[in-house]
Image (cartoon, rainbow, N blue to C red; front, side, top):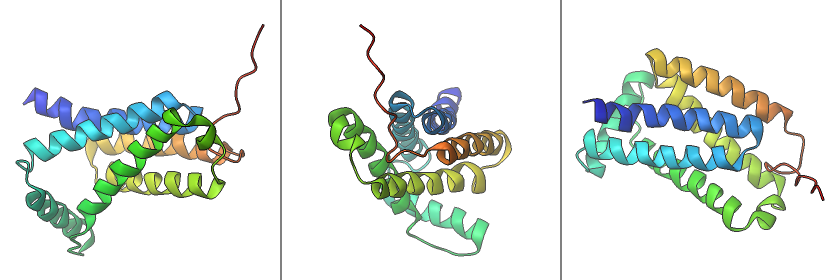
Length: 164
């Protein structure tokens, strides 16, 4: 059971912490690590909790949403999938085309970061409990401070001055 706990719970806690540090430090490495850890978490949960069944994952996500909100919304699992696609895609873009990434419209950065922020708050604070919620709240506070201090046109910091 320890392997399941590590693969499912600790990976998402680490992903959320990486996300917060990426926002606070404007770090591509933390951004990418968080996205990868979220993917590992999702794959592990899909296998161990849902038996590899999308339908089981959809129904369980709907049940959890209904318990918390009173609304039996069956589309929540698709927001989880979109979250992974957006975060992993954004991280890949940053590595594969850093110049294009740095010059993208600010609105694109705000939409991507806002969507990820929304999903993290829901997953790590609203739907979490116990130590996971504590980690989530701390991460959201750190990330919010980073978001608030971001005054540049995009998420990436200005290139470092070269020392010759």
